[in-house]
Length: 550
Ligand code: 3UK
Image (cartoon, rainbow, N blue to C red):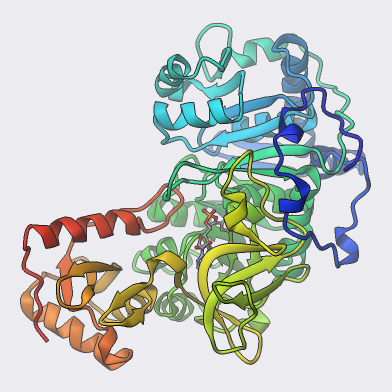
């Protein structure tokens, strides 16, 4: 490891032992980084130095902000952090806000000052905030005053947190402190392998894991996925819905645009209708959101709504082919599917428009290698379903967590997804490995059944899980949200069952169908299968009618 720029050595001290790291590969010339590297300097200061400070960086409801204006704000916050709030290089700072200017500015200030960002989703409750504070030993939080309530509660639960500074109103605000500080600041001289971000996983399974990322990792995702697959240009206007605390949002809405000197639209809340309106209003050109959001937008589309768009990235969960087809039909645009993970920071499999295959996730992003392995870690031949393994410039380093042993196997990151690679090297998503439904000895991937249901015109969204069954062990159960104006009925359930039998192997059809008003989703847009399974379990225990027709 290189000579650290950190004074507070907590992050480095709590990295997993190096023998537990995945093998890091820097195969492309773009991925060779100098020993001293501060990603905030590369992504922000470089543009101002190059005389491009007048370019727009942020589009917000309050107006535009240029690279130079943003840099001045960041520098003032750096001065506040280091002179008044006791931040030393290596110190962790919790950030809590929706996607807005101050969220990005505080983010960059912590990076530039050599601190370690721990960004949190706005909807987290006190208990969920207390966990990362304790796990990452965070003494300082910067928070949007509108989110003060849970923040204060979290402080009472996590004594490590010494100080919260708010912005957006009230006494002693961050803005008040910034006013007296100069708009210049010399960036911390960090090593390219100094930790700058601890990203906590959403924790749908077990307690959240803190994934540690270096300054060079922030650059690597730009120089791998963004440069090689997305290929944005300086005039692009990025837009999207994922929170910046979700690394899908961090990359897609902040790092990727900044790497090419482009601009980005920050929306505090971006449900599909608002996102669509904003794409139109700001004439956005590159969008980042979840598959279900693209699906929801299709039915809302008015002529001209998305005519400015030229690239649409879908990630976070599987993109059903039905959604790909429907978006293409409605807009003429090819959705760019890509699988990413918090552990790898961003997308590592995904193909550009010219070579993608609808329904497949794609090929490994240049700079990454991927393969399918069996339970013992042996390579499987093309056409066989197994566990996805990947390695490249980024990878898993958990903050003191035994689960490092599960995620990294023989130097490869094992994401927990079941995949198949075809003869041409395209990767086809099957399911989360632990989500496979086993019914009468058959392995059935819920997403495949969902994909079949989604091609029926009555189905808006659906989730398919295993429900306990005395005879078959599990049966396939579908939770279906119908399109507006369609009413549930036993006849429709039977019709959907027949439809699935015609689309995929008949044994995969859902023996039980339940109609629901909405499906449970995480803040990152993923279907909460755990919740659906619990519901299915409870319904089975109550002997709920399983509509076993068919
Ligand atoms: C699933 C997908 C099929 C898959 C993420 C882009 O989702 C992100 O990170 P998370 O840590 O979850 C990782 C898991 O989500 N997944 C994500 N994308 C796809 N499954 N097709 C996809 N296209 O199970 C994976 O292991 O929340 C996504 C960029 C950054 C991210 N952090």
